[in-house]
Length: 125
Image 1 (cartoon, helix red, strand yellow):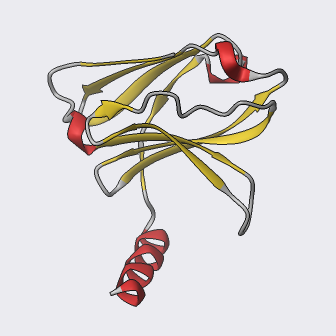
Image 2 (cartoon, one colour; image 1 turned 45 degrees about the vertical axis):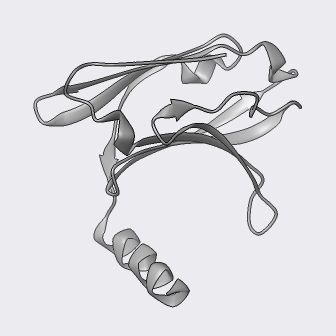
């Protein structure tokens, strides 16, 4: 189960949250929130190491490695986004992954990463 709350300064249409399983070429994406809604029944079903990826707009990102020591089927994640002093913060709570129980700040992508992403998008077109 996933709960997302925001203050009135957060544009939820710009927000995406996903878990990524695997590294390199063999990866699986579990979208948790996209297109302004929670994605139902799209959560990992086995224990393992995942990467939580939160994006806001095209230039703010947060990533965190997450270890599920047991089957995460009963996981309850809460995300509480708010904007303060021109920065976006999020309080995260997790029933199964204690390393996620924290408050984070969304970080801007560095210029090298932006150039890399732009070159990938150019190659696709």
